[in-house]
Image (cartoon, rainbow, N blue to C red):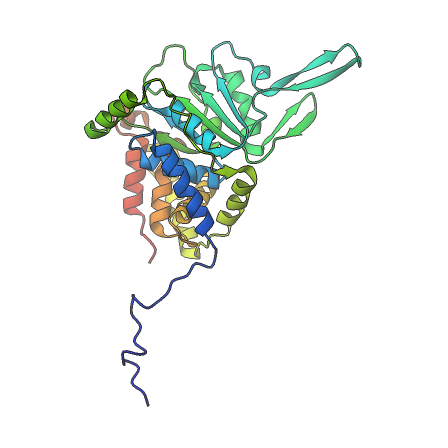
Length: 337
């Protein structure tokens, strides 16, 4: 009988070929190409870029939060340039009405009938700049379209074309002339991405690039990478990423823990559990894996949960943030093996 430990039959990490059951090579190629295009202008912020790509693959909306001048708007515009889809920008202001976003019915004198004139929301990628500057009734106009990808006006429902992604920006510091986003709207964003100031070496590189640009625009050289059909195809591919039962239970324990945490006044809803699941699949996909790991879940948890929970007033006065509490929860919930 042959010895199973002979060199011919010995199994090692080097000679085992872990091939994915889903062909992710085209997706990875396009993801890396988009990253390359964005990084020609955006310095640093690799985590933000990854989260934006995961949001696209997971068919989710994004809230970008940061002080003025940290490239929130330019990032969304650059991303739109890499995608061959419709793009619309809406600047939210205190006098903006719901009809300015959704559209309105106009009486046609020739046909003696009302005709619906579509608003700027009828596109694929929507950039909403300073979303917290519009009043509550205008913000509420986004509830249906963000969740169901449809608009109901005068009793008629209008389906939006896919893909449909909202990227909204807001300034967390300035409170003058702003309106706090309601929890129901925050819950409709897959991610809340917090953008910090660049480091010193990144700041130097930003200045150098701006100096070299001279009169050339930042968007001129950006190449188009993905079409609408390719995006829809990749979104379907990401849904097929495998998730083991113990990881599903891990996600549930994390979310339930937010509801039982003494530091939180409001915990996360089941929509948050589904959001973590979808985002974890997206992170696995851009890492070239057709299965989710606990690290994918942990990477998705903070941007998914930090805007869906409310810190107790006492803890908030102490300076404790929702992201810090979520990190503590991730450290206490047992990681499946």
